[in-house]
Image 1 (tube, each protein chain N blue to C red):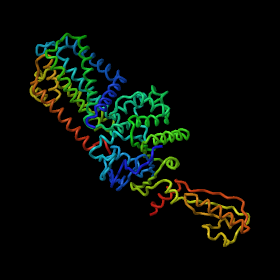
Image 2 (image 1 turned 30 degrees about the vertical axis):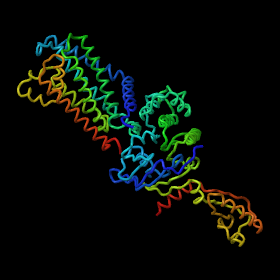
Image 3 (image 1 turned 90 degrees about the horizontal axis):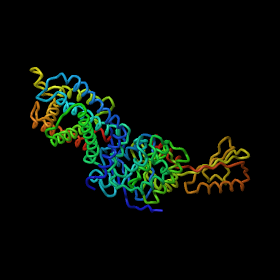
Image 4 (image 1 turned 180 degrees about the vertical axis):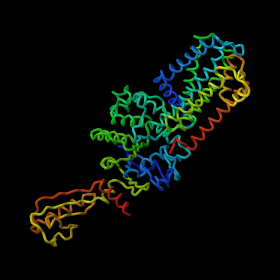
Length: 255
Length: 317
């Protein structure tokens, strides 16, 4: 038996079904939160702001808001996906099945990434209710979103294996990803920051993601799209290597 | 009934597991399971039963040793073998919000098998779960949840099935019902390894019995052979009049006087019925000798007696 395609598909389907069971938490809550951002920052405050990089402020913040939701939801979905079987003990079935690292990643990470893409589409549709915008490079935007969703699904998977409590599961998305996304140019351009903060902001990896996505939307960015893309691909590779190591050693999976 | 053959379906050699902190859960275990048999692994709590199952099923990383299933070394060619192994865990671990049908269908797919509604229906019906197929698992009783776990393990038609305490926490009626299910599986040719606290369960179903304690296999034998070799009969004969000493006519029997000569106690025989024959001869000898008695209480040792004796012997050693 080579790659267990049916096994991977079963995990994928089940994870998506789980999301449908928790539709409010998985879809409606982030859409509501994003809508509130658009209302407060886009319409209420944004109407009094000057355009940034020749982009209307309400439109300028769309990639950042998308990234904010995408990173948080993707990481949470993926980490919960693997943490819950560990917590409830149902992981016994996965470990005893003819399923390896490849099937597990395709199933869990693929489902988390799919949910994120659906969410991104819903958020972009929601944004049209508040602001007129056009995406300059739509295919590149989709590609970049897929890449980020896949990378952070892998990252979330690692988090779900590392965490041994619900508290730890929430620490990274809430205390690290959300603040870094806020400080990564979601609501402003990095060149609006005074020296040396504009340079210090470049130490924030999320800034490269927000900037990269904004480039695919409007063709302008704080940093080169090549660097953003390279960094994301590098992150993807590192996460994949870590997961391969986890499966090889059984760390936190097998006693 | 499917026959037990000498062909090894599972071969464990030199298997050891030392957990972090130094606890040696398995200590150089050698065990061979024959195709088609029901093998009962008995042992007190913490003996290493669940660790042994985990090491075969991929839940535990052995520290050393080799496990071969269906001729494949599980350390290398695990995919093929795992697809033919089913596991019913001790804990009621399942997605409580999933429906019964979906949970069982998921298990089949996870093991690489194509959807088969007829097979899922057959499994659910055989475990009287069909009427509950659309119920969420959390709505079921403990016994029914355990049936769901069995259904999940059977969904991919395993050739080798591990049942870790399959009847723990279920009532007597359900337990006997499950014994029937297990017997039916055996008839279909499934090899079954079960761990249990209910020795009666092993006595009822097993072809062979293994006793494990502190990670070491103390004994593996055919159940009947073990009973014959280690079984004993105990008979207490209540006498009408006290005896001061044993008359020569019964002195050749393994008997002793107790209760101030009011009771004659016989301990002997084996698990094949020899003890009862001895007791019959003993009572005839008593009558011939003019010794009257009021009653006889005969007890054949059960597998549980043998198990307890075996474990406590090694405890003392």
